[in-house]
Length: 124
Image (cartoon, rainbow, N blue to C red; front, side, top):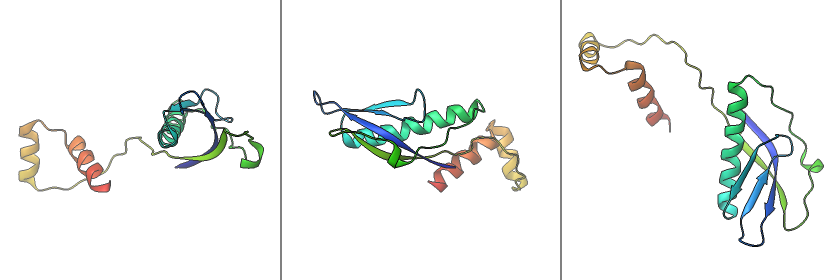
């Protein structure tokens, strides 16, 4: 599921770094050593904050409109997007040849783990 929230990028004139806060998300704070890193860290921090709240079954706040969040130069406001994947396990029926099932059993492999690893690699 995709989420978009406005973030405040607070520029630190001493070292060129940025502190990122999300006005709608208490405690969601990140830092970046430069602008490119700050953009990456903002997305990572937002994703982790949302995943934590989803895991705890906490309701996510509504995102403010860009026109309601203000910043004065050299600070700025930018929208940040987090694409949060649903990590819950689901059961699926999978068919495979008998010889392959025998080999999996003999090797001690987890068929679920092998399938997840293969699909993750294939879908990236």
